[in-house]
Length: 391
Ligand code: PMP
Image 1 (cartoon, protein in one colour):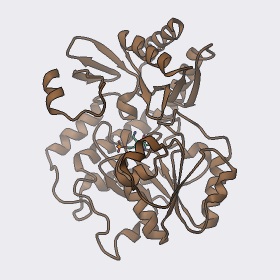
Image 2 (cartoon, helix red, strand yellow):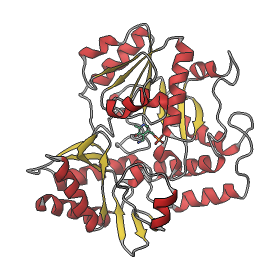
Image 3 (tube, rainbow, N blue to C red):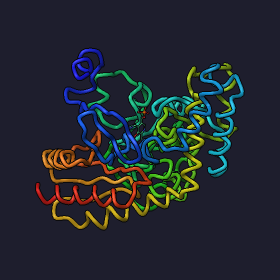
Image 4 (cartoon, rainbow, N blue to C red):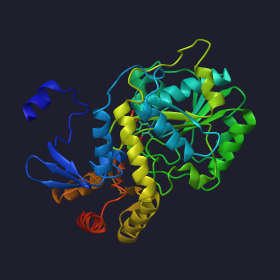
């Protein structure tokens, strides 16, 4: 299998982890070499209910018996899409009442950027240094890390990058700006939380210039930070919300959500100005509906706060590391990339899967399933603590 992996699959780096998964269940990955790993990154903030949650599996099986793909997005009335969009928008504040489904996070951001241009008739976009919004051309254009952009220029013109959390920079947002796109907490940037009040100031500058605020909650969404959505910590409401990752409960699904008024600009001049074949796949939507039900019934946002408290109480204070983040979306910042790699390696050898963040080699990602049982959480935190003492 390893030889064929090397021979037939495109690699994204010279050093893939290369584990072969036999099966996955709850917080565990079981490998073909007999090892059991505690998944402390949840497939990068996807498996918030753990792997193969029974309610999600049941919803998938039920939908398999009805239909798979039947038509491109937007033409037929497909019950899983309708039910899930209703369920989701019932939990969102007004005016976020209209959902456009995609297949992935980057595709959700592409749709959101196009929507902002179409609705405002403006081109200028503002984004933030150290942000990550995806790897297709539009999303990459607003991703604030030049080493990932440079090989692919030219990208979208007229994108200005500001410093995340800088109050003074917000005056750059003007009446020529179509949109500002940002994450509530920069995930790949190393779990960076902006200072209190900054989001209120950002919201207010967007409103006064009639600039649309796009919040990318692809990583922070669905309970991970301790609220169902991270904007609830900030007391603001975005104009467009982008979602993916944990939404599908392990199935691929993305979405951008806005008001019907804003979203209507995609339906005419010309009609079909934004379409997708697979967006809102019925099996993914059925899985997402079940996932959201479990999240609310089992109060997983609250549980995420408890998980965060456990992580803090065990790993803080530490002579060598700093913890950042919110809820179960935490980053452990170490003095160097070499030390961070050592910690990850020691934990892996002891059965705990941790990860890196894309823009910040010194920051280790801690993002366990939100429903990780207490004894497994304790086991993983003991391993991490032990590794911090060893390096
Ligand atoms: N936005 C954020 C904040 C992300 O963390 C990611 C994925 N890491 C994306 C967008 C892109 O999502 P996808 O990989 O599904 O395209």
